[in-house]
Length: 341
Image 1 (cartoon, helix red, strand yellow):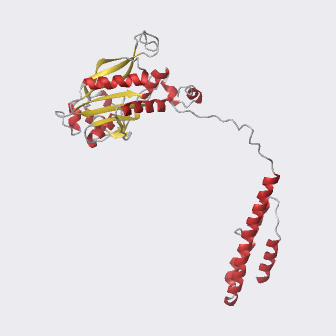
Image 2 (cartoon, rainbow, N blue to C red; image 1 turned 45 degrees about the vertical axis):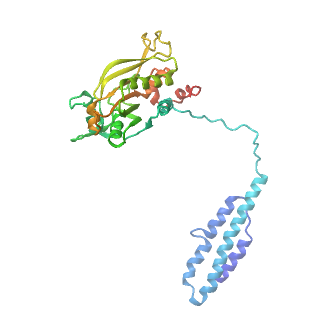
Image 3 (cartoon, rainbow, N blue to C red; image 1 turned 180 degrees about the horizontal axis):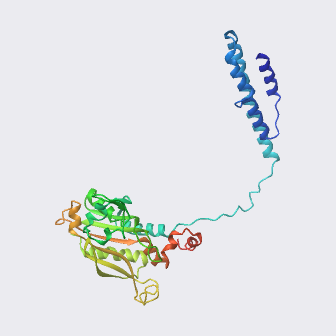
């Protein structure tokens, strides 16, 4: 073994390399799993006790010499490649590659949140997989309400309190009323799911931003002012609103909100179907039953809620006529918004 160590020491000192592949071959031959030095360490187990100290030192010296020699060769080959290899011309233009752009839904969602943040609204979020109580029961939906039917809701499991994919972000409002200290002023952005046929005007997945304000002496006039300020921020200072009576189980009184068409200025066009108005959201005063279901005294506190579809707002803002375009991941569609986003 001593003679073999001496032979390897001499061989390592004389190693030379022209390329990195040569160095890798040396490493495998000497230090690999079946390399010469590795084999010597395996044979070292059979060495007589009185020889172990001397041969052990020589083996360690051999291994360290091999490692340092390989590193030395790597440095020399690397320097040679830099000196003799092709030179980079950093004045040349780089390779062209396509840049992405933000999705119009994301931009619209953030703009809505930003507007209400100016008015003091915080952002609240909740789970997409919810129970029946938070989606329906606490929001004053009677047991026979059509929204509970399988045709509208994706149910995951049936029980006394079924589990389902939320159909609106109003469930986040319920969780906020259960847990947050009063007063409450929040917007609830999120993705929702409904069992609907996919078309240019409808989809089984879409995005909502809902709002909730609860405090003492909150009135319908406060609701109207909040909606008007939002409309002017989103669609322009000249925007007008109108509120039409409507019905929602969780608000009373309730209203649908229209804004004056920002395409024709209210004169009538194909976008607004000649009416001069575009529907943007539903809203209303929070029903006393909803407040009581979350442990809030309706005799002391009142509030309003509103909700809008992000896709709907984006369609009106940029005149997108087919809802399915938002989900097709077509970069050509996204590039159309590069100059407006």
